[in-house]
Image 1 (cartoon, rainbow, N blue to C red):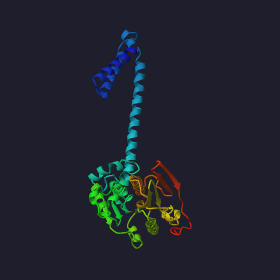
Image 2: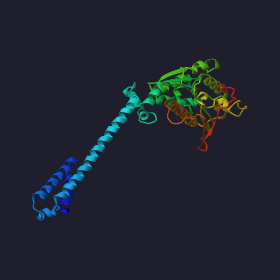
Image 3: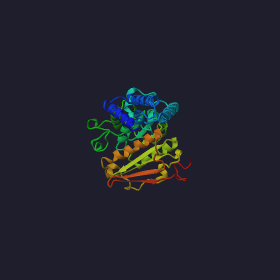
Image 4: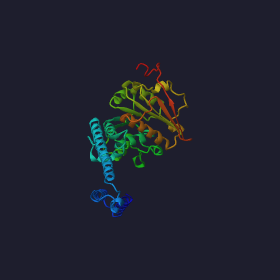
Length: 351
């Protein structure tokens, strides 16, 4: 028995050294087994060679039967697993369209890092492709938000702003460049977004957002991002979003601190008026022009707004509905607070 095992080990080692395929090594061991079994059956009992190779044919027959049962079990198990995997794959294909549906090869490569993610995948990327998002303001918050929305492949991106690019913007509004000074911000933003991703449709509105146009404009979009820097504008945006039932991703910044939330009374979350029913007193909420703002802060908060928009569109994860995320850049701290609707809210209380 020991002699046979030694020969088997020698055959396996030689096969490994010569880098023979596994199938060839198992074939040689099979031939060895047949040879040993033949000796046991052909030679008389007590013969030295028969004794050296086990001394009994029944032992080798039992051994061969055991190996055969193990091999058969592995083959059956492997086929069952392959059939289960194929069934699961077919079900997944039936439940969701292939990632390539409606997308060109260029788009598939562009959005590959989204498509491979379980939470986004092909269906999520197609939802981004079909979404329409309006960004109010092409300034500090709007700049990074617009760039990341364009990069993510949001199909239609509207941007409304009546301002022009000035040198004082360039410290933080990275969507604009020095050679586009004095250009309307919406057209400067359009240039940057189309340069980043020519597959998106950009709608620039070079005008101030006013109450008489807000509702009609918002009704044409799935989601609103508010990057304005005055409380009066935020109130107007909130009122129009509540009236049209459009979710609103709102951001605000000042000096070193910023905040982000999702206002959506139609989805059970509060609106701006639930949290801030009265305008702040004079001097309590100064604009960036008055109080200043550290250049990188709008990038942080604006990127968070874009991320909330992407989650809102794709259905990935959990958005900031019912929560407000506050970021303190000076001390590198973040905190999240719960916010709730007010039944007596003058803006959304009747929803």
